[in-house]
View 1 (cartoon, one colour):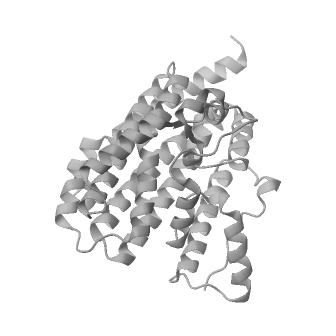
View 2: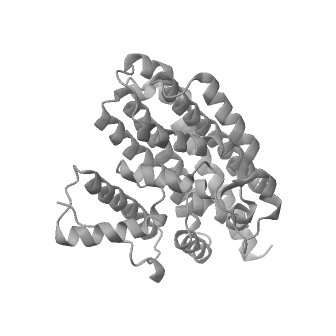
View 3: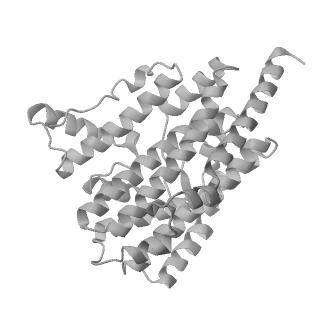
Length: 335
């Protein structure tokens, strides 16, 4: 056995122990029995304790549906990952654990839309059926990202889950601004779970530094340089077989670009590296007039800054220099 394959075997053993530790710390029953906070309550319990007192604004409802649609398609996304990592016990088991929690996220957002009167149960069901029969993840993107069954998913999901957690945290702030306490409590819980998922993959990446550091740094640099959130990879189901890296298709999620713009109007930047033009405008404006974080524009800046800090923190923690192409990733001053 060569040194490279021995290093990989030792790495795989280390990851399995990492998974065992993660599950011992984050077993859902343990978390729920030990916690007396609202985060330990079921989704229905939270909505009963903090019932809707006013309808959601149209924009906030639209943003929630966008988050829900991405969570709904996770069944397809995670099945692609499970297929790629199926021979690696720790990864395939974590993928199943992860999928279960993400499925609850989609359910939670469905229940919010119903509880606040934005959708009926039948409308929620029809939306899910439509998504699952018309959309799937673009194999020309997903398969290329995950060619390496260890370093592909590990590096991409490390960043993706961190950005998703940031998104839910800012969705919580929009909910609080509109006075929707139940929704805010649920978003906080979803954010914390996304950050736990990030922590699992980031922990894997830290382990990889001890075994194949050059490979890890190369893969993570590629991910950060060409990053997009999963919503951009959903394409029409019938066209999935014809998609190629040279001929990518636009997202099939309902008006994905319009959804990101709607989110930005609420102070949420859900797909940060596609918000570079927005960040450039805000930076120019901030140079003339420092933006107050309590305004919508100031919240966009703060959200952008949080994403920037996340990227820089991940790279620094792994000993990776910021790629030259991403030198524009810098915080914007706020008042």
